[in-house]
Image 1 (cartoon, helix red, strand yellow):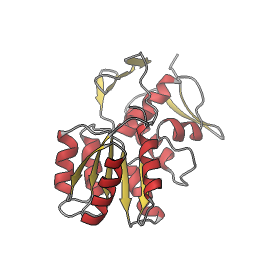
Image 2: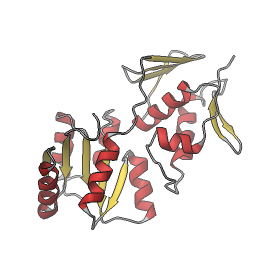
Image 3: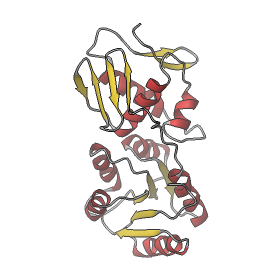
Length: 231
């Protein structure tokens, strides 16, 4: 869906005034808005219905926003998530992003900025092309099944790890920079001043390379990373 089209948005917010304000403003723009006032209801609605963007408060009754995002990503639901919260320090932001959220907006906020961030998430680049399967050596990635195997052994990846591996495999034997990864995997067009790339590369290596004799993912010192074919 393009960012200038109408969207279906889920807002999970326990402050009724804030929720009503966001919902009214988004509906005035033509979007369809679902509301949930606690974490458990939010998770249920997010898994039962398809949405283009989720706006989720961090602090919620029943289940906090961080737990919602972790549950969604574990279920391979990759809908973009924007955290809306009073928890604005750098540690909270890093924790939210590494849990699988896509953006972070601190309260109090201007609706114009919230709307801009929702639009940015809606136009997030999709890595999938006409190819539905990628193969490098004994490493195989199936786009449609969202499955990864190496040497016939299934590898379970989180959604961000899957996107990261897909990007590396589409650029096999090429050096990709940290900036390229931030822009194409996380849609960050700025440096978030976190180690989110390094952390996910490390996690991916532990799953893709650790149990095998040949390493595929390499650090190119001073440049970036490369997934190299064993040939």
